[in-house]
Length: 309
Image (cartoon, rainbow, N blue to C red; front, side, top):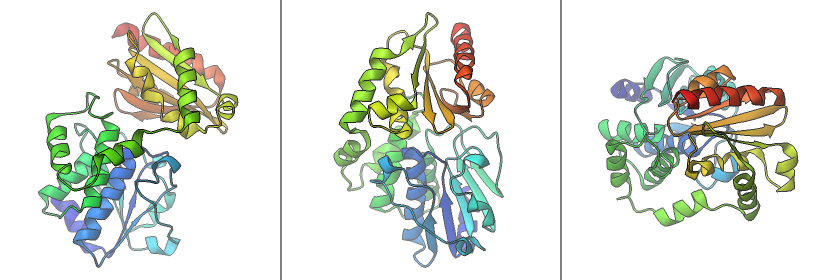
C-alpha cells in the first residue's frame, strides 16, 4: 500500500492534505509531517495543508488558505481521520482522488486508497514508516512534527498503544537536530487560567464505586476561568493519575452541543462513543450529545463497562 500511495503522489502536481476537526498533536504532526516530507522530495509540486487552525497548536504549523479551484484535479490525502464527517475543510470532495491514512478503527472506509493500521500508536508513526520504507528524505521540520504527533498520541509514551516500534521510531527521530526541550515546553506548558481550571477539575470531579470518573464543564464554568472548550479538552488526561479510576468522561459545553471526552485504563469505551454520535480508539474516544439529560445515560453506560471489566 505504501508503494501505491507513493505512485499516486508522483502522478499529481497538486496535493492537499487534510486532518480531523478539533485537531490534536497527531493530527497536526501527521498532516504537517507528510507535507514537509513531500515538499523536500518533490519541490516542484504544490503541497498544501488545510483546515481550521487550533490556537494551542499554531506553534507546530500554520495552515494554508486556498481557493476552491485549487482543489480541481488535486490529490487529497486525509490524515488521522476515521470518519468523513470529521474531515476538516469539507472541500476535500472537490479533489480528483482521495487517500485515507489513519490508525483509528476503519468503520468508515472512505477514499480511493486506504491505509489503516490500528496497531500504530499514531498516524505520525505511520507517516515516518511510509517515508522510510519508500526511500523519501525526512527533513528536520518533518522529524519534529512527526515526533510531536507520536508524543501527543502516546501520552509521552505512557499509553498502551506505545509499542517497541514506537520507541525505535522515536529513537530515530530524536537524532534530528531539533530541540526536544523547546518542543515539550510548547506542547505541555499551559496558561495560568487553564491551570486553575485543572485545579477545579481535580477538586470537583466525581468518582463512583465502579471506578467511573466524571466532570461537567459548562459554559458558565469556562467563562469563570476565561477559557474555551479546547482548553478544557487539553485537560482530559489529568484524571488518569487517580488511584482506583478505571474510566472517565468530560462533558464540555460547546455552542449548542456537549462534547463527550472518554478515556479508559482498561474497559473498552469506543462502543459507548459510537452510541452517542462518536467513535475512536478502544481506550480514548469522543462523542457528542445535545442535552444535559443525556449525561446520565453516558455515565450509566460507562458504569456498565467498568463493572463488567
